[in-house]
Amino acid sequence: MSTTSYLSDRINSLSESATLKMTKLGRELAAQGINVISLSVGEPDFNTPDHVKEAAKTALDENYTRYTPVPGYPELRKAIVDKLKNENGLDYDISQIVVSTGAKQSLSNVILTLINPGDEVIIPTPYWVSYSEMVVLAEGKSVFIDTDIESNFKITPAQLEAAITPKTKIFMFSSPCNPTGSVYSKSELEALAKVFEKHPNIFIISDEIYEHINFIDKHESIAQFSSIKDRVIIVNGFSKAFAMTGWRLGYIAASKEIAAANDKMQGQTTSGTCSIAQRAGIAAYEGGLESVNKMKEAFARRRQLVYDLLNEIPGVKTNLPEGAFYFFPEISSFFGKKDQDGNTIKNSGDLALYLLNQGHVATVDGNSFGNDNYIRLSYAASDENLKEALRRIKEALAKLA
Ligand code: PMP
Ligand code: GLU
Image (cartoon, rainbow, N blue to C red; front, side, top):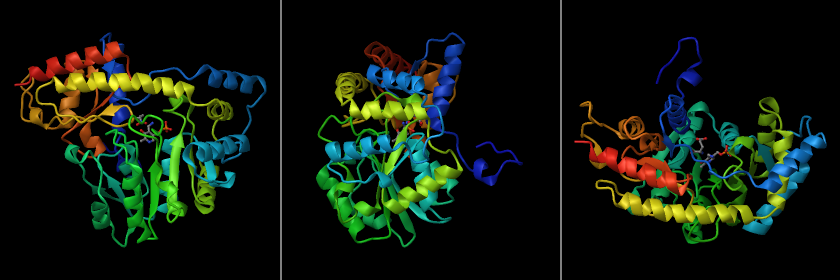
């Protein structure tokens, strides 16, 4: 990590986002005229649905151009309340919803709202890169529960129980999971909820941003268990389900107290998010799930394609992810091998850089997700690009000696 003496300890202690860094490096190579295939950043390769774009154009024409209420337009919060009721069977009031500039901001708000220096945050590994760094910003301490490919990257209640200490303040996870695609079933969530029942001071951040990209079943939220619902903070957003990554629109659903605290936080930092994006968000939720279901069909086909191609690469081990749009294959068999210039591949970071520079495929190192034996591939790319990327990866890996 590079540090600069006049910058704050806070920013000097923070690592750069690995997903965004690899995306930047890929773009830089592409700007030199090199044909780089990006499997690094996780974003749908589809356009925002037309009816959502139309709503944004109308919003402009109708002069939705002024400051918005800090927690979001009431109509958008109502649309979110209706979505939570109709799709998830969950009861919330609009005072429990705070709209933000993306699930990323919501996560950061919640952590900064709840964590005092030294408080512990339990995070199952692998986890999305920004979780642990947000804990660093809040001067908390991440406590990791390790999982691996054999456990399908899911924790057991016994593992959870063992990680809890008097200092535990938050448990934070995503299901479907970025980066593994693992999906917790209702009974698995219920078993975790039973552990939380015994520990009434722990809050649960349930990151459900990939809820609609689930290939095995209907989405289940841990907020459905009434004994702990008050302590669950659902984080969700429009980026993945409606291909709206650039619009910056997310939200929390939480207890009134936590919602009010997030509102206060935003009131002193960002204010309410973009008026036009919010109007578009209302159209997205009111317009139904046709577009996301179409995207899901494409993702399902690509998942099978990438699974088959990964299985043809000697030394790579993968499971079949149940949701999201990532593979998290095990690649540690390449550690200790040398590239064509005689450099030894020592870790997942070296391998990701090798694949970028020699194979011209951008991926993300597993270390940034909490496990160095893996790399992450996003399959939110065209079938042609995926086939070519996997061909390049296979060829580049075969050249390591
Ligand atoms: N959570 C997870 C698990 C993610 O993968 C992402 C990346 N999109 C986010 C939160 C943040 O999403 P956004 O800020 O675009 O809503
Ligand atoms: N969440 C996406 C990813 O994991 C987007 C990039 C980011 O914000 O980290 O790639």
